[in-house]
Length: 307
Image (cartoon, rainbow, N blue to C red; front, top):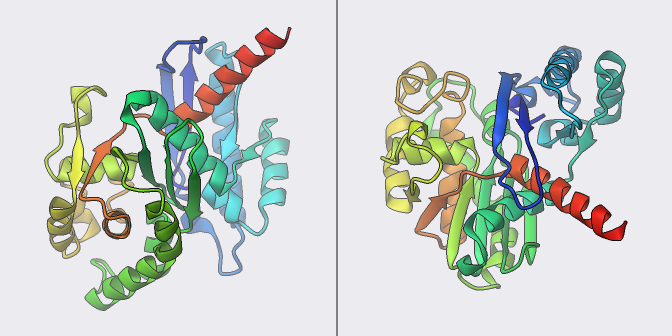
């Protein structure tokens, strides 16, 4: 249950195997835009979430899933009424959501990147922009040396900062300053560990930005090298920030659901790369979902060894 979508991935998970999706279903809710002025998820948002979770649970049963791992991220995590939301979802769907902490979200995403690139990658710095939050981490092992989660998600910032389409230049500049200020301390802490051998980026936002700057489409498969460069990103921001959401939705690789928030996502990506002194990012196809699955597989192995 992300801040943009509810996503069900059915996986035939085995020890030592790749967490390859056997079935994939999602629906757009944009929960982060349904949080009210007091910070609570609205009644409408809570009902939409419960309905989507019930649909996903029913589909999981139809697919014959032996186990369901249901987890929620930034939008539910940051809601002031998160406990009430979880109880409502349980009452309507029978599914109890596990709320991942921001640090856990960063650590699990880092685990996915580490497994994708392997030990030969050395130090990895990973960035992930979701609808509600930004996760950044760095490390040489499977557990990062440092992991941070900041409320700098593309959907959250769009909802709270932009009230015109396209956004006003003044608002863009103010948002840039805000992002820079929020990133200052975490970036300083990560830079202290030294430059990474691999600077990686996960999430739909980064994949979209890379596609808009010339990377291969998703139809080319996960093993094609895709990169996002700082100069290319700066040029892209100058271009898309003057467009309406409807016009951005016409660009190849930009979905209708995310066209309104890609400018804020691009600003976060550019500021993060600048703060971390990164000129280029490799786009990693694995992210949080794969990290959760990999952790579950690892726990299964530990139980087998203990028994």
